[in-house]
Image (cartoon, rainbow, N blue to C red; front, top):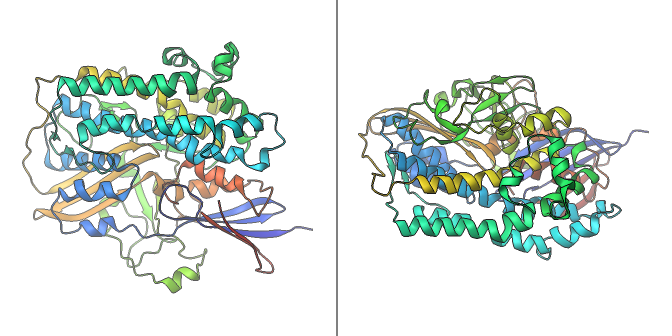
Length: 532
């Protein structure tokens, strides 16, 4: 006899905000899922009527862990609206800021948010379980302590140029508001070398960065793993072995379509910023991949659906330039009686070319594998091969995140060496009315800001963050968002401890924070209430 159960998991993240997940189960398998962003953001509404540069101060506060990415997007949006001129030094220091914020997030996410679930009792019968617990258990794991400690180093570099991290405002239209000295550059190199020597090479890779970057395919990865004990027993080696042994490659597939806005603008190719000229200047390339072929990541192809979002007085499926500031008129009574056939989330449902698209590191490494990438762009075929052999999953998505660390390290060191201390860092722009678009790749994926300026103030401001792409609800056609789709088909071994749901959600690293409510669908009886 088919047994139907309902799990209400609230919240399911370990970062900030509130993410509620409701899954419907039949015989222990998820057949349908809903993700619910339970908090109203409202930053767009705050900015209407303000000075255009208010976004440089306000939007970094939209997130406590990727504020630099919002600053990057906000300043870039004003660059295109005002037609600024950007010195090469400004592009270098913006790239260094974005990259140091992203690389610090990798060990922090892996140890503090994701890998602790691998110490769950679900995997206690696996041969590698004891070693996983020894290294990855929360707080007491030997690698947990080393990785989380090391994660603080790269943002020390950010603070050298930005003055502080998080919530810096050193990126401005026309460049950056800093003038580093040789001492600053030398210190930044030393901090990054400490990150490499304390964690990246001896703990994470078990080899040199140069050796790791030689890997071009999944077979190469497996050969690297068995090359010596240092590789095999590194934290990456343990994750590769345990990830497959624990079956992380068998669930969490998602929508199978991916979007990246790309980031890191070449210092000599984007000195006169325009919306149309951005993609060719990118070092980490932009693109949309539908599972078969690549398309340009044109911001004109974005629409946001609100049929299932708690907003009123808005037409459906509008481009961000055409959306009004959100009208939040839902009260607490409405939230307590959520109708999943109606409105059930504060998140809109963004679509690219009318498709739900996954944003994040997996999208980025897929774009890096595009054969059409130009000489100044990252060319890395590894994940084209991995996707062909394994497809998307919790394992593939998580491997993509950690795969970026060695390359980011080499790029940061290279950019530091290119800063010319005798050249300018800022060129004052002329303020004017207009529209602008700025984007980047936050650690969690595609982030973009749209701005309209009229009569010297902000007429409209829209943000679509990576979490919006990933945790968005159904669209107007009833198609699920990426995490909703990734949860479908997942087997839940213990409804009182649904670690599988947590692994799926945390592989996306949704920037929303978990109390779990488990209910029997027929009786309505609450089975459990607990925190993940």
